[in-house]
Length: 379
Image (cartoon, rainbow, N blue to C red; front, side):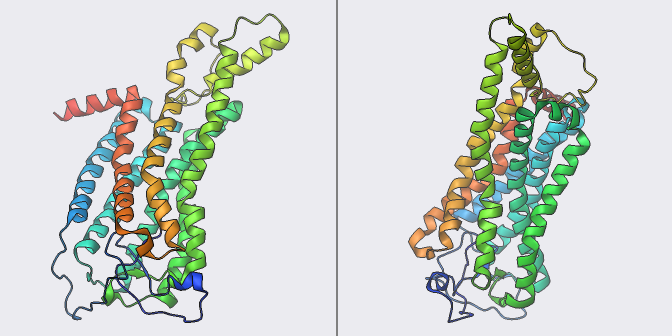
């Protein structure tokens, strides 16, 4: 996610187009919610000073609250997945990947964000700055990629049920999760390397990413990486809903009387059965179940779709403001968008990592039972 600067920086090229010149005096900072660059001044600290007076305000308190809420909730739910073998299914691997990403994001992004908010002149050198900027880019994009994988998994299950039931294993799920992390790393790394080698600003003024020098690539990242999570989920959800609805209509229709309707009925039944949330470890050797048994499992089969539903709603609410803000910031000066819009976006986006485990517990009965057992055992 593209971040705003927290202090004015000098122009690097007076010949840039007017659209880009809006960003000429801006550099991307790892601190996401400081004051407007138009009202900020460059404040250098002594070379032997590392920590100055902390800047305590509402956002600093919110960062601390978000970290306190995110780490135990995601960690507890993740441990519940590991504590029960029946929950470690191919589909649930994507959920475990999301919870792990939330933990990494809170540890390696939110904590440094807090430090950079409290100490705008926090100075640990170029190496620290490079590692910090990379972790912010990587884990922010990684969390959104985890949501994309869940949506893509449901598309596979609904539109190609036979392939999904016979090919989707734990190993495939793990490979897809790993590939997602490799993808975001490959997309993020080039801009970081260029910034480190050629465009890095003075770290005495804060740890910054020089967006003015790489405006084109920053725009590509915003749309191709950071906004993509919303695009994929918005497109995937209505398609999956429609396909499921068609399958349910076929299964719940009156008993077939002709060979043609029999084939249609069986196809709808297979599609419905392929959507079971447990993903049944490996269903390739499973025998044909009677219609009554399949209908009785409809409640279980809808759990994965329920997870997708609640997550689509939550990411729409939590991500849309911040993505809209950073997209507009590519073309508009910060003053025209406003500090309030940024603060609201930061708060909602940070809440998503805390909301994810709660939604999973609310929508997955087996997970609730495992979590209850884990808590009782610890008590």
